[in-house]
Length: 436
Ligand code: CMC
Image (cartoon, rainbow, N blue to C red; front, top):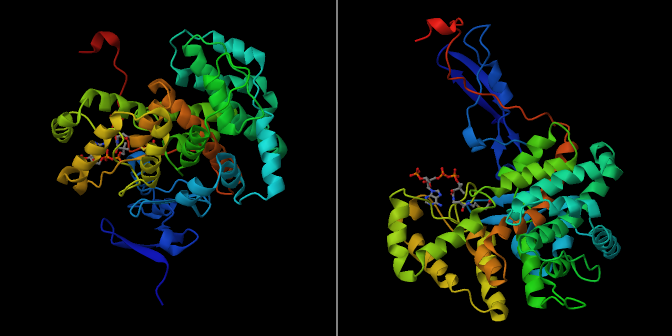
């Protein structure tokens, strides 16, 4: 019978080692070896043992997780086993949030309670509002969001009791409820507009649109198509397994601080142009290209290595990102309300030219979620600086459920990778007057 082990022969010593192979729920979803086993491979007794070298963790499983499944080769994304296509069509963001956090779709009463709890935690303390007023008028909304979420930690000192399940749930609900309020206030701060308080009669995304765009009207009525589009965008961004910001959430969470500072750290990781800042870069890129006629020349420069095609490529997807496909199909519906974003034609042409080009085909570079999200957000009236904030709101659900899962994992340990040392060997201190 074949064994679920791997035999390694160390050619330095001729010794043979047998390493166990571990599977996830199903062998077809991948197998891995516990790399700590490699430490047994030594050339001598005082040898430290073999380590694995994997910058960027391209081939390392950092945890076990039952939340999100991605098959990057086939372009599949599922939350708790449900396909992203089905959830985007049939569910709502808050229902998906419940599913991601709890593992199952809610019954009627559970969903009502959940919606009620989130809706009734949307207000923020007036002192947080004052804190936000201290930012410079042109402060980037993402900088405001990150700092303000971290500041929430000081308003809820009991949040540090992360071992208390009930208190933990309270912080989770607070964070999911307050992120849109902070994000909307950060947006209005930039334009010198008075903050618009939450309206509990509206849906999660309807209320968010109200806090963003309400002017002098007594009651803001969100356009149902835009409200639904926002809901779908939030569903698509809710979780994406062990990406950079989620790894930051787990990594920071591994030293056991409260969830507010963990979410602030995760949001900081999201801010970068290679992660949540990419859709902002896509818009800048499309504006720079300016016209379909300039697409071939731009692609030439990408291939020459001058810069990357933003919104293209993914560490995991080596096929069309399923989220990008949903957004590409949704865009015309949004444009019926907002008017067409002229950048869409450039984007579609850019995608066509890239997908016919050997450079992109060979490297399996396809549009990712950021390629179309920015075009939709811009048509809805969002300035580019707000895009990463729009990503952070729904991803808070993913961060918190991954954090919760991490805390309950018996394999949990503080994140502390090793290094391959490449510096000087031991040497003596040289007094300053003897140095060259
Ligand atoms: N344009 C041109 N070439 C690219 C691109 C791109 N967007 N992405 C990767 N490549 C090339 C890269 O130059 C390399 O070529 P070579 O083998 O000749 O050196 C090859 O493809 C592999 O690239 P890599 O950098 O090893 O891939 P990675 O897995 O480390 O990076 C990525 C993934 C998303 C950072 C990268 O594809 C990228 O920079 N894309 C543009 C930024 C972007 O759209 N980010 C959003 C990601 S999706 C939303 C999210 O989850 O945050």
